[in-house]
Amino acid sequence: MSDKVANISDVKTNWMASIPVLRYAIGISFIMAVTSLWNYDLAYLTAVLGLGYIAPGAKPLSFKQGLSFVFTLIFMTGIVIVFSAVFLDYSLVFIPLLLLALLWFYYTDKILGMVKIFLLISLIIIPFVSIDSTAIGSYVAINLTLNALMAITLTQIIFLIFPWSTADEAFTKAKQSAAKQPERDRFNYAINIIIILTPVLLLFYIFKLSSSVLILTFIAILSMSPALANPKVGLVMIIANILGGVVAILGFNLLSTVPNFTFMILLVLSMGLIFGNLIFSNHKLAPVFASGFSTFLLILGSVMSSDAEAGEKVWPRVIQISMSVIYVVVAFRILDSYANHKRKKA
Image (cartoon, rainbow, N blue to C red; front, side, top):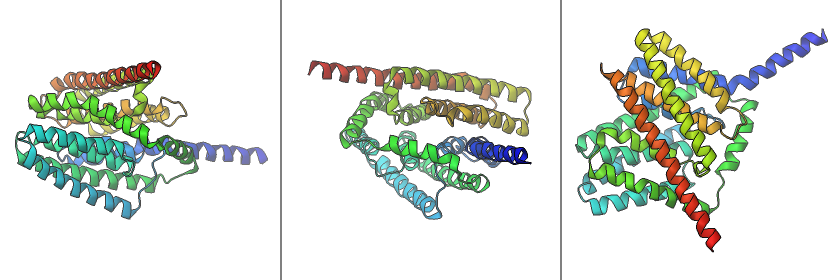
């Protein structure tokens, strides 16, 4: 009898330990299902951005926090629309002001991680799509706000099904300790990111590359990880994102052979379980695999929501994102080597 009780206890322990991974995999499949059925503009971003709300250490939001976030995003996107309309045609004013705003966003620790990501995406996407038309910028701003609302709502529904458990607490402690940085380190880190972003922003602005603004956004999000200065982490990041792109290509080819909605959700679920077990581990490179999974979702989602020529866009997306990752990793490495050289010289 005591053996049976012990076995039941073991099953319960294993189940509790599996809740974060199951929440992650089933949750992202649920988001993909809802957004695919609704099929609104930029719907694939909901799944990618929703990952942050069910990532290791992420706690369920209160109603007040969610509402505050949506209102903050509406307010900020409104400011960005006005900023784009007034300054976009004056490059000597627009670029310095944009860089100053980005510097503050990367430096500050007063804004929550996911709020910061959404605001950064708004600050980068809206002005550059407004190059073609201010109306397009406003339209994208509305869709970004809708994505924010959907990401918050759907992820909180997931937390109702898979509530916060003791297995999540270890990830929360690790996240809190990693978030604490001295003011000087945060400033140096922000300066490095601005150095990395400036040539890319100028390239996009001068050549009006508004159609590839998603790549610029990807670079900005990747730059938020200071760990990329480590050459080993950077190399694994490149491999993980290329792997995510290759898996997305394989997934797209499978879906082309079996164009079935249920099959697509099962495909996302299986990839979520594979990547989730790597992400929710104690390995120091776990966040790198999260980036690889987001690459998988970004490419698969953006291609699946495209037109009949979607197959022709898969490889270019993978190549563009791979180049973005390589650029960020190499740039961080160069800056880190330069800083080490200065320290030795001093």
